[in-house]
Image 1 (cartoon, helix red, strand yellow):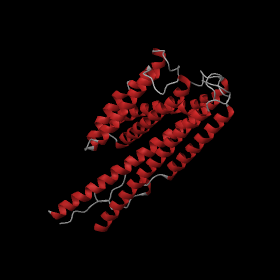
Image 2: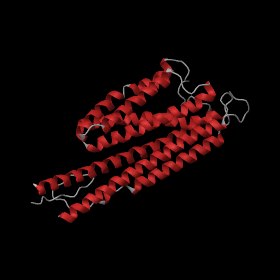
Image 3: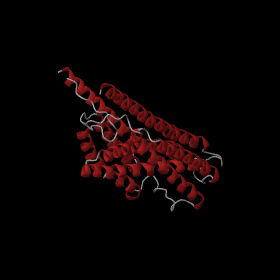
Image 4: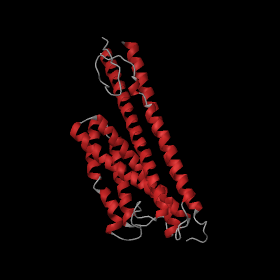
Length: 255
Length: 52
């Protein structure tokens, strides 16, 4: 006996009776790709402009220019983890896969950006502080934040049942966010080596516009990364479901 | 510590090089994941079409 195998779509992987090929909306979005290229170009333009237009700092020399990438990267990591929290709550509330895929995208991007923030900080710290790393509260809480979200990703990777993995990950995404405000406030609560966070209101006027522009452009790039990773998660889930459906159909046909 | 007005360029270039390696590497990684998943989905649907 042959069991009809419905074709899958990214949005409706188990629609019985559907035999349509992958619809256009399931394909990687061209508009999203264009947005990504634009964001990358804007980041490049913003960085070159800020680097060329800002004078060297009296104490830090040209290493001050690392701020234009370090601060936006750190800010974007915070934003990504906030989105993990929001989408995790959304998923537990609605059980909508889209929320889970966005949470996954935000967690992966936030983790990559946190690791990058630590690397940029080390490159800045070596010439400025004389050390690559120290157990300063800001650095330590950031490292803990990185470990929490590496754990989040590991949990997702090692859970066989996607629905259960999404539920557990959502719980970690909500609880893990507790550390994010601690990281942000650590430079104010424990005044040690790391200076208070640089914002557009705290830096010298000569650096203000450059910092603002780069925060905006890196945020756009972060949004692109999150949407693109969510898109790939959606397509992967649909492909897995289609494969599973075929296997089940094959097993039923052989029985 | 700074020894001349031009001090610090090499560290700055290193920080930007690492940053761009991550930006471009991640962009490539997510695009590849999407493409591979889409190809797999299309393949499965073609099989389903052929069998039905």
